[in-house]
Length: 58
Image: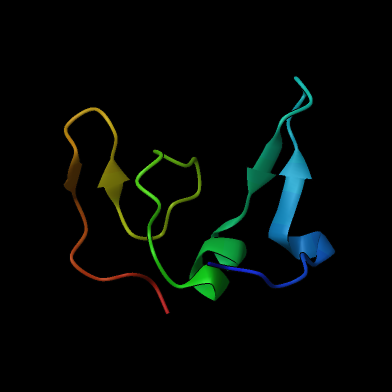
């Protein structure tokens, strides 16, 4: 389980009030949650259930 404190650069609030995690946060977490996140550096496509990128950005 990922249990680190969030930095202000790890997320922002959408106009609708949702928390949106940044690419920096996802890389810090270290794995893809397969939720189709807006800033996913792992290339997961929720519609197909596949990864469209081979490697995460570093």
